[in-house]
Image (cartoon, rainbow, N blue to C red):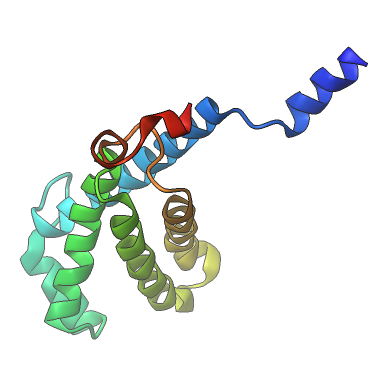
Length: 151
């Protein structure tokens, strides 16, 4: 009976500490990807082209307005940074979710695998973060939440 219980726990059990670590890793992964992409669009960091080239491409080639281009670039830049820190996590994840929805719609004509899979993956990850919340290892938890809830 004990063997069966161990196997059952291994297969279907949930460890709260490991769940906290999983959400942390997801936040870090999505946050770093978005921060690097956004900082390239906004600041020209990490091999990016900066805001002027981003504006030119999004407005003239993609047909976006200047306002939507700024919103998209800064959502990736600031939203990615906030996800890494775990600060204002749910609002940041919500903004990223909307941004990745638009990115997926825009890139679907190139095909799913060659265009929309990347924003779709970030979209789903943002939904997971939005639903789960920042969890234990975050500034949100440190500042706003009752930490004993996650032990």
